[in-house]
Length: 223
Image 1 (cartoon, rainbow, N blue to C red):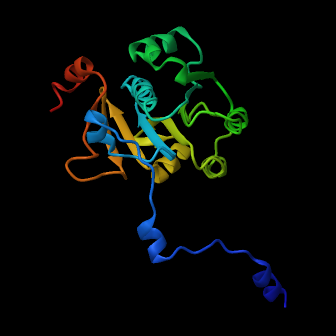
Image 2: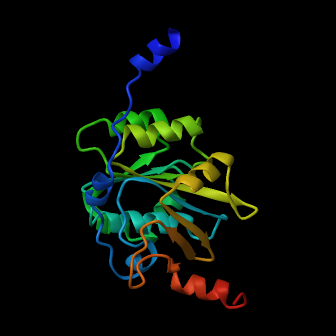
Image 3: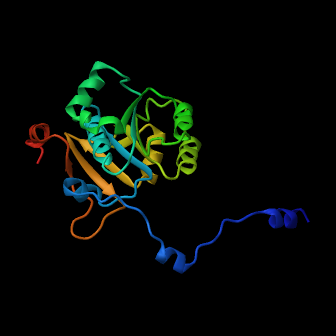
């Protein structure tokens, strides 16, 4: 009796038919050039992950990517949790040419996950948020990650993480890595990209060079 009541009262999500799946249409960003070769033509929602050791170019790639995404999204945000609004962050900001993004980009100075959620509920909130880094984001757990992406299904969250033993660090970063649509492992100013948005004619999966001179110096003895 109790089982029948439970079953009878449960509400199931609508199942999708073969036709539903086959005919669905999705909005993608029309990437070009090196961005297309590495990232493909992605949907700008869900979670992406940039990870690697310190000093390899993670923050620079995140800033370059955010600036590029301003072509497709009205407003973007960079939550600088590790550096805060500091001289080192300002130098990275200038190196990436972020002034060219104008008013489309805002910087969040060590904004907590609760404050970020409140911000994203507002009208005209950022469509893309970089969180740099997972290591410095207090209280970030698997359930928090799940709620963040489910509560804001139209947003893209780009997480930056450190690396230990060749794997994203800490454990929550490894969890995000498993679920991310795009993964970019950074080493020596190159990003080695794995994307679920690969297409024909070389769309997606190519190495992305973050800084030509730095990459040339780093990789000269490693090839």
